[in-house]
Length: 139
Image (cartoon, rainbow, N blue to C red; front, side):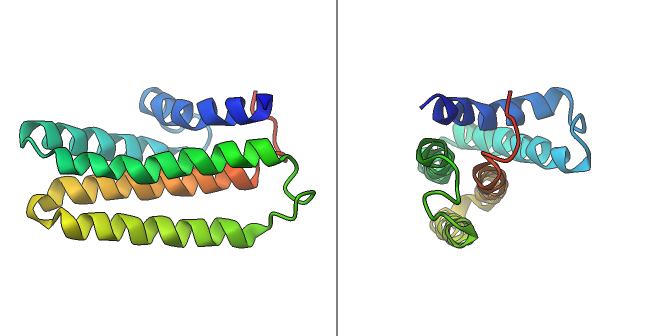
C-alpha cells in the first residue's frame, strides 16, 4: 500500500517539477515539461472559451494514475504475472481515447490537441513508471 501511495504522488510531482527544472533528470525529462505546458495552454483555452467539455481530457489522466496505483498495489511485476503486454495495450487505448476526445472537441481543435498531447505524454510517463515501479527506488 505504501508503494501505491508513493507512486500515485510521484507522477504528478515529476510534471510539476519539470516546469522548474526541465532537464534535471536528463534529456527525456523535457517531455513532462512539454506536457505540462500543453496542459496549461489547453486548460486556459478551455476556461477562456467556456468549454467544460474539454475537462473530459482528465479521464485519460485519471486512468494513468489508476495504472500507476495498481502497479504499486500488485507488487513485483513478475510475481503477479504482469508483463509488458498490459503496458502496450494501455498505451494504445490511451491514444485511442485521446483521439476520440479530440474528434468530439474538434470545434476547439487547438485546445483539444494541446490537452491530447498532455494526456498522451502523461500516459507514456505513467506506463514507464508502472513498468519500472519495482526496479528503481522512487524516494
